Length: 40
Image (tube, rainbow, N blue to C red):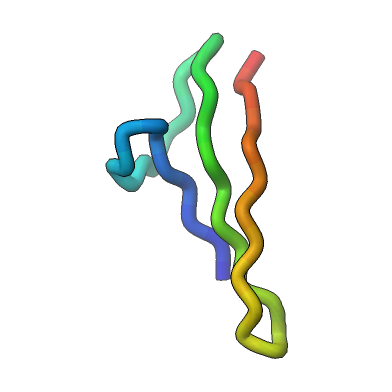
């Protein structure tokens, strides 16, 4: 499962151009990984 959050912690469903987001991924073993992404 993946969820995307704005830097202020709000969950977002549509990415805006030029913004930085944190993508939180949960793998099949239940481990949570966070990845910073920048929308072009």
